[in-house]
Length: 451
Image 1 (cartoon, rainbow, N blue to C red):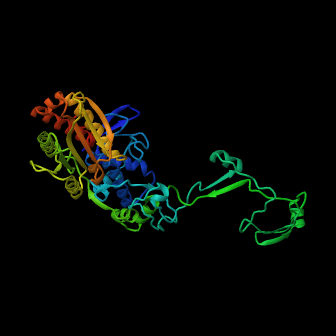
Image 2: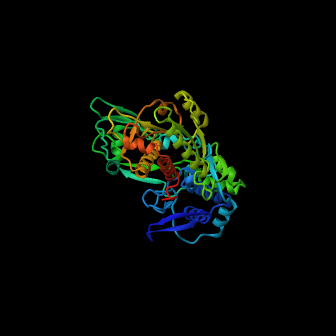
Image 3: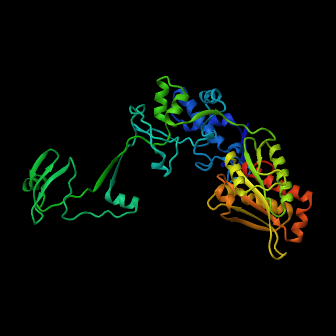
C-alpha cells in the first residue's frame, strides 16, 4: 500500500510505500539509541497516526495540498516529524515485525501522544487538552527516574517575566512576605523597622542584619529580582514516555506491554486496508425514504443509493422498503439500534407558489461532520441534476434531534415546481440524484477517489 506525500522542498507529491514511511518517520523522531521493543512500540504509534489519514478511518487527505494523503509540514497532517533521509536497518526491522498493527480504542485509531520523559508520572488529558480522553489516563512511571534532564533550570529576572508573559508584577512596598525555609518569623515595629528575622535556620536582629549586609538602616524590605524555574521531565506528559519505554524494553518488556502500560484500555489490532473498488468497506448507513409527498420517488432514489453504496462495500439499513408508512419515532429507533456512521433522509419540499425550486440539505446545529457531508451532497446533487442550490441549513427537526448519529435531511427539489417535478418523475433523473449523493459520500471518506 502506498501513501501520497507532499514534499515541501521538492514541491511535489511523492508516492511512499506505507511501511517504509513508518520506518522513516520512526527513525527521524527517535534520534537516540532505543531498545528494540521500544522502537517497535514507536513504530506502531507512527502507523496508528498514519492510519488516521486513511479513508477507511475517516481520513480526508491533506487540507492544503490537493491530491495528497499527507504533507511533510511539521504538525500539519500528523504530529510526527517527516523527513527524507537514510533509514537504519533496525527501524525497518521494527516496522516489518509489527507490520499492520495499530493502537485502537473502541475500534478506532487513537491519537498516540508521547513525550520524552515524564519524570515520575504521565498526565491526564483534561489537564493538558481540556477534555477527558479515556485512553490518556495518568500512570505512575518509575522507569525514567534515573534519566537526567538537560537544561532543566531557567533563570528569569522580574522584567523578563513581565515581558515574556505580558503581565505586570507589582513589587511590594513595606510588606514583608514569609518565604518558607528562607525568610520567616518577621517582627516589624510600627515604623516598619525590622526588629528580628529568621533567615534559613538562624534568627537575626534587625540591626545585626543591617551591619552584616551593610544596609543603610533597619527600615528595609526585600523583593525577589530573579526566579529559578526547575523542571522535572521533558514534554507535556501525555501518553507514552520515551525514556520510560526504553527502560521497560531494557527490562525485557514487550512492545505490547509498553503500549498498554502508557495507553489505558487500548487494543492492538490489524489495520483495515481499503480494498480496490471498495472505498466504503466497514461503513454503515441508515437510509430513510420520506413517506409524504413523492414517497414513491423517494423510495426509488433510496434504493438506487443503497445499491451504489453496497457496491462500494458499505452496510445499509432502510427505514422502509415498501408502501407502508413508518412513524418518525420508529425511524429514529432503527437508526439508534444500528448506530450508523450517517443517517440520511431523502424527501421533497413543497411551497404554495410554483416558482420556488431547488435542493436544501439540513443538519443539526453543532454537528461538524454532518455539516461537512451536507456541503458535499448539495454541491454534487445540484451540479448533477442542474437544479438550484438552496444551501446547507441547520434545523431541529424531530429526526435530527432524536437520531443519535450524524444525520442529514435532503429536501431533494420541490414537488410543487413543474420543472423539479418533471425531473423527479423521470427514473433516469432519480438515478442521477442517487449517484450525486453517492459521489458526495465517497468524497467525504475518500477525497482522493473518483475526483
